[in-house]
Length: 115
Length: 112
Image 1 (cartoon, each protein chain N blue to C red):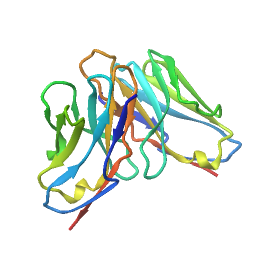
Image 2 (spheres, one colour; image 1 turned 180 degrees about the vertical axis):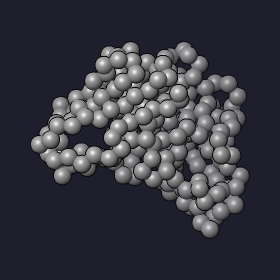
Image 3 (cartoon, rainbow over the protein chains, first blue to last red; image 1 turned 135 degrees about the vertical axis):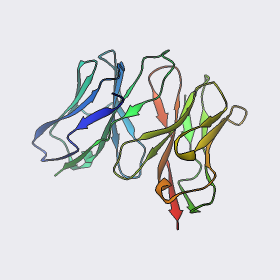
Image 4 (tube, helix red, strand yellow; image 1 turned 45 degrees about the vertical axis):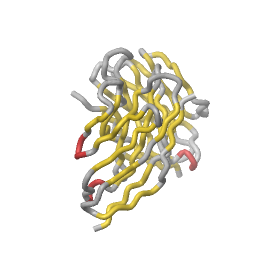
């Protein structure tokens, strides 16, 4: 299995809703990432988990809450979002450092619309 | 600090003509460099990568890139563009650690 899966593909939510995005990989990667991508822009790093521990938080608002319950799964919990949070949310994973294979593998993304 | 510059925000070529997408980077260490392609409303797909082996790297779909340390460049080329190559292309650098730095992207248009 050489892919990263993300669910749902599309999500529409109101500003008072609570929802979660899910990301899964079974490649044995120990680093997992959440990115936010607005139209015509590069992906913007939000969070990095390394060996199931949060290693990078790029000053993301607390209405985004990441969770890494195990080495294969990464969640992003959403609460009280704003319309400007509408974007494509991408998950990625990468092998451990020194493994000789060091690129990121990306999921297809979740298209989020906040009304 | 690492950074990536993609000199052209938009490149337009005719089908069957060569493609050149430019990328320059700054890095304190020997970097790993990547080119990713993103078609509309899709995730990112790895085209090719440089990781300190051969400086001329061949990727998928006929793309290749040459790492030039003296010029801190990693330009992407393809001899003959196809309509399906129309997409957004990102140059990415990774130094030691888990952080990947993206360039701003180049949108490639292919005209019939």
